[in-house]
Image 1 (cartoon, rainbow, N blue to C red):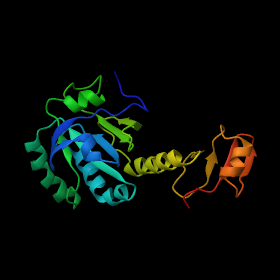
Image 2: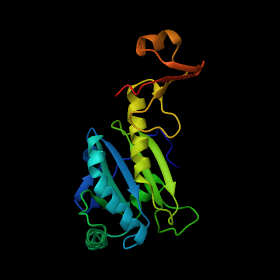
Image 3: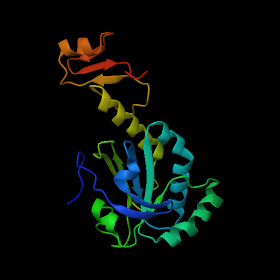
Image 4: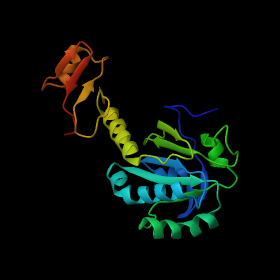
Amino acid sequence: MALKLGDKAPNFKAQTTQGSIDFYEWMGNDWALLFSHPADFTPVCTTELGCVAKMKREFDRRGVKVIGLSVDTLTNHKKWLKDIEDTQQVTLNYPVIADPKREVADLYGMIHTNGDLLTTGRSVYVIDANKKVRLIISYPESTGRNFDEILRAIDSLQLTSDYEVATPVNWTRGQDVMILPSVSKELAMKRFPMGWTEQNSYIRLVPDPRR
């Protein structure tokens, strides 16, 4: 059965480029970004893994651990790291799971249904500190991911987990947010004593509570 938003992320044990892990223990009390790539020694994947390594400080700032995965072997992963370093000018600073038996891939539904049965797609899972799946995105093999957008979505997820707000279209960190329609006017006055800009009865804009 495919994972859905709000499901508990399955735990697993695996070999990675940074040693053996138990996923839950590796996460600890942090959030996690788990993302799969189709294969080692491929051009798009090489750019993606390099990009995440360069952005890792941004994920760290948000308490998000990052980990990659493909169905290649650990031996291939370790050989590939040098290519990533040489072409992307960055050292890989997070683990990549070796999943040659597709155990984790099958557990998370990473295999493209209509594609090569041995190939994981470009799947993205954001998992919160309670081990709940909060975001699922799947890209085709030919399209590289936009990790700036994934980071933006994490900002929204973390903000809306702590406050009774939603983020509007194209929102970025620090911009105004929306009071949830489920929050009554009386409760909103207590939660947001600075007031809000009301466009109509259900569109109520307030400054980002974390600013």
